[in-house]
Image (tube, rainbow, N blue to C red; front, side, top):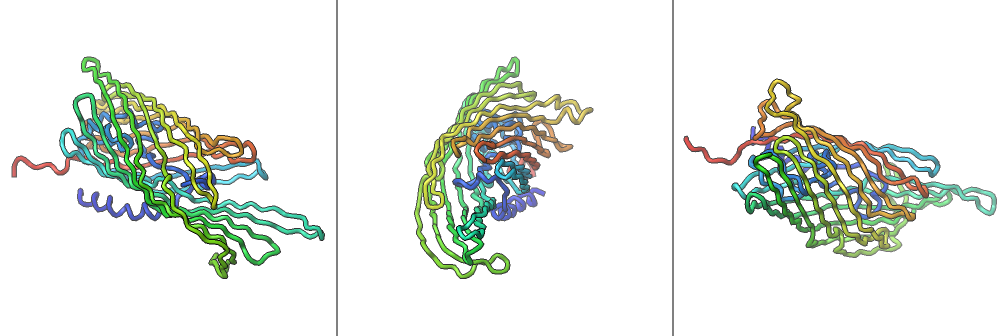
Length: 429
């Protein structure tokens, strides 16, 4: 059985790299919609992770690699996300919906010793998958009409692979480091077509991305053994970008044959640039309080420095952004074997994000609420918490002001956490 889990973990990575993810038209800018750190456990609690140390021995925290003092089992997680986005704009009173289901996380983690824990994870970090058509009719001086169509399309996924190590200094302090590799291809194209012209004018931007950086984490947790109450403080910072993003610009004319095959292309201009400012400095600070194996609440603040990226041959400035998250979990009574639902872990949370996008003088902000459960397997115990993870997130992004787009979303997540004691030497043959 363990061999099957390992083979599944490896083979699933190929599908993850080839997925097509749905997202918002706001993904037009920069590297698209960022989806990283959207594990079910984290997302169900509003995104809190920096000061979250699981009470159970089967959950590895990748967001803050220092927060794994209690992790003792080998854990394999497989998770999938179903996104449902509902868009509305006052421009022509337009409404649309987009749905997407994709594999959102696979991870393998295991203890190296009582103090050292290690984990590997693979997720989509961001994606572009939009198709926007703007058309208008122009009156010509001779009384005739010309229809002009402006089409924006984007495709591609930026994936990330991480390796994390945590070290427990003593009963109250721990540190950790995560190495992050980002890789993938993102493409945007703007096409201009006219009813009185045979050719289409297209301006395409292709980004080939490889980026490497580090996330450092630290935490302090004090447990009052007489009351089982605990206070946790955590912090992380991501820095040290070693980026290699190659951007190719192509301005050309062409037409489409049957099956949307491009033909008769004539290059007007073509150039290539390299940049190293793909992922900015990020930092996070969190504080939490709870009762051992019963409940936990946390408040977290995240900061991301602004950046300048190339977009259709020109630069676009992203602002500094921040996110405030609050959430936690509750376990009624794991020793109540008469009631299964008393042994279920219930999660809850909410967040507000001041976005890094500013369009027509409006910040594209985001907020939402979330909830989830961990349904333990029949043979699961308090020290070996394996089970089915389910989470839901409901929220809003954007605005209707100045003909911009309001996005309502419902994200459903489901996954499995298989945890057991592996790689241990037996005492007797």
